[in-house]
Image (cartoon, rainbow, N blue to C red; front, side, top):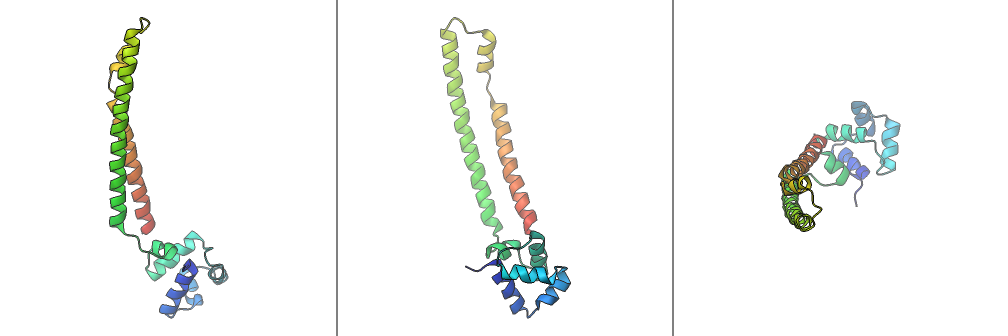
Length: 151
Protein backbone atom coordinates (compact mmCIF):
# COMPACT_ATOMS: atom_id res chain seq x y z
CA UNK A 1 0.00 0.00 0.00
CA UNK A 2 1.32 3.40 -0.97
CA UNK A 3 1.95 5.74 1.98
CA UNK A 4 1.56 9.50 2.20
CA UNK A 5 5.32 9.82 1.88
CA UNK A 6 5.29 7.61 -1.23
CA UNK A 7 2.70 9.87 -2.85
CA UNK A 8 4.72 12.98 -1.97
CA UNK A 9 7.89 11.38 -3.36
CA UNK A 10 5.99 10.55 -6.55
CA UNK A 11 4.80 14.17 -6.85
CA UNK A 12 8.35 15.42 -6.37
CA UNK A 13 9.69 12.99 -8.94
CA UNK A 14 6.97 13.58 -11.55
CA UNK A 15 7.47 17.33 -11.37
CA UNK A 16 11.24 17.07 -11.04
CA UNK A 17 11.31 19.10 -7.85
CA UNK A 18 13.76 18.96 -4.97
CA UNK A 19 12.90 18.84 -1.30
CA UNK A 20 14.82 22.11 -0.94
CA UNK A 21 12.59 23.90 -3.48
CA UNK A 22 9.25 22.72 -2.07
CA UNK A 23 10.41 23.55 1.47
CA UNK A 24 11.53 27.03 0.42
CA UNK A 25 8.21 27.70 -1.34
CA UNK A 26 5.91 26.22 1.35
CA UNK A 27 7.81 27.40 4.41
CA UNK A 28 8.25 23.88 5.78
CA UNK A 29 11.65 23.32 7.37
CA UNK A 30 13.77 21.01 5.23
CA UNK A 31 14.83 18.85 8.19
CA UNK A 32 11.20 18.36 9.22
CA UNK A 33 10.16 17.54 5.67
CA UNK A 34 12.99 15.03 5.25
CA UNK A 35 12.25 13.38 8.60
CA UNK A 36 8.56 13.08 7.70
CA UNK A 37 9.43 11.52 4.34
CA UNK A 38 11.51 8.87 6.11
CA UNK A 39 8.93 8.06 8.79
CA UNK A 40 6.31 7.44 6.12
CA UNK A 41 3.02 8.60 7.66
CA UNK A 42 4.03 11.00 10.41
CA UNK A 43 3.08 14.38 8.99
CA UNK A 44 1.72 17.54 10.57
CA UNK A 45 -1.70 18.44 9.21
CA UNK A 46 -0.61 21.98 8.40
CA UNK A 47 2.30 20.59 6.34
CA UNK A 48 0.01 18.25 4.43
CA UNK A 49 -2.31 21.17 3.70
CA UNK A 50 0.59 23.24 2.34
CA UNK A 51 1.87 20.33 0.24
CA UNK A 52 -1.60 19.58 -1.17
CA UNK A 53 -2.07 23.25 -2.07
CA UNK A 54 1.40 23.48 -3.60
CA UNK A 55 0.86 20.46 -5.85
CA UNK A 56 -2.83 21.27 -6.40
CA UNK A 57 -4.03 17.87 -5.18
CA UNK A 58 -6.75 17.08 -2.66
CA UNK A 59 -5.99 16.19 0.93
CA UNK A 60 -8.08 13.06 0.36
CA UNK A 61 -5.71 11.91 -2.35
CA UNK A 62 -2.61 12.89 -0.40
CA UNK A 63 -3.75 11.09 2.78
CA UNK A 64 -5.90 8.23 1.46
CA UNK A 65 -4.62 7.78 -2.06
CA UNK A 66 -8.06 8.23 -3.60
CA UNK A 67 -10.07 11.20 -4.71
CA UNK A 68 -13.09 12.41 -2.85
CA UNK A 69 -16.27 11.92 -4.84
CA UNK A 70 -18.89 14.42 -3.78
CA UNK A 71 -21.74 12.58 -5.48
CA UNK A 72 -21.03 9.43 -3.45
CA UNK A 73 -20.92 11.45 -0.26
CA UNK A 74 -24.22 13.20 -1.07
CA UNK A 75 -25.85 9.84 -1.78
CA UNK A 76 -24.63 8.56 1.57
CA UNK A 77 -26.01 11.63 3.35
CA UNK A 78 -29.37 11.22 1.64
CA UNK A 79 -29.43 7.56 2.58
CA UNK A 80 -28.66 8.44 6.20
CA UNK A 81 -31.44 11.04 6.27
CA UNK A 82 -33.93 8.49 4.93
CA UNK A 83 -32.83 6.01 7.60
CA UNK A 84 -33.29 8.69 10.29
CA UNK A 85 -36.77 9.49 8.98
CA UNK A 86 -37.71 5.80 8.98
CA UNK A 87 -36.35 5.36 12.52
CA UNK A 88 -38.21 8.48 13.62
CA UNK A 89 -41.48 7.16 12.17
CA UNK A 90 -40.97 3.85 13.96
CA UNK A 91 -40.28 5.68 17.22
CA UNK A 92 -43.37 7.84 16.78
CA UNK A 93 -45.49 4.73 16.20
CA UNK A 94 -44.01 3.01 19.25
CA UNK A 95 -44.58 6.15 21.31
CA UNK A 96 -48.26 6.19 20.26
CA UNK A 97 -48.65 2.51 21.19
CA UNK A 98 -47.07 3.08 24.60
CA UNK A 99 -49.18 6.17 25.27
CA UNK A 100 -52.36 4.23 24.44
CA UNK A 101 -51.30 1.39 26.70
CA UNK A 102 -50.56 3.81 29.56
CA UNK A 103 -53.89 5.57 29.04
CA UNK A 104 -55.73 2.27 29.19
CA UNK A 105 -53.89 1.30 32.38
CA UNK A 106 -54.53 4.68 33.99
CA UNK A 107 -58.21 4.70 33.03
CA UNK A 108 -58.65 1.15 34.31
CA UNK A 109 -57.03 2.01 37.61
CA UNK A 110 -59.07 4.35 39.68
CA UNK A 111 -55.94 6.18 40.76
CA UNK A 112 -55.26 7.83 37.38
CA UNK A 113 -55.14 11.59 37.61
CA UNK A 114 -56.72 13.72 34.89
CA UNK A 115 -53.64 15.88 34.32
CA UNK A 116 -51.42 12.87 33.60
CA UNK A 117 -54.06 11.38 31.32
CA UNK A 118 -54.32 14.68 29.41
CA UNK A 119 -50.53 14.90 29.04
CA UNK A 120 -50.36 11.37 27.70
CA UNK A 121 -53.18 12.10 25.25
CA UNK A 122 -51.26 14.92 23.56
CA UNK A 123 -49.18 13.93 20.54
CA UNK A 124 -45.46 14.49 20.79
CA UNK A 125 -45.02 15.49 17.14
CA UNK A 126 -43.06 18.61 18.13
CA UNK A 127 -40.40 16.50 19.86
CA UNK A 128 -40.23 14.12 16.91
CA UNK A 129 -39.81 17.01 14.48
CA UNK A 130 -37.10 18.53 16.67
CA UNK A 131 -35.17 15.23 16.68
CA UNK A 132 -35.46 14.95 12.90
CA UNK A 133 -34.20 18.53 12.45
CA UNK A 134 -31.25 17.78 14.74
CA UNK A 135 -30.37 14.66 12.74
CA UNK A 136 -30.56 16.57 9.45
CA UNK A 137 -28.52 19.42 10.94
CA UNK A 138 -25.84 16.95 12.12
CA UNK A 139 -25.64 15.47 8.61
CA UNK A 140 -25.46 18.95 7.08
CA UNK A 141 -22.71 20.02 9.52
CA UNK A 142 -20.71 16.92 8.64
CA UNK A 143 -21.08 17.67 4.93
CA UNK A 144 -19.95 21.27 5.47
CA UNK A 145 -16.95 20.10 7.53
CA UNK A 146 -15.83 17.67 4.83
CA UNK A 147 -16.40 20.32 2.14
CA UNK A 148 -14.16 22.76 4.04
CA UNK A 149 -11.49 20.09 4.45
CA UNK A 150 -11.53 19.62 0.69
CA UNK A 151 -10.74 23.28 0.08
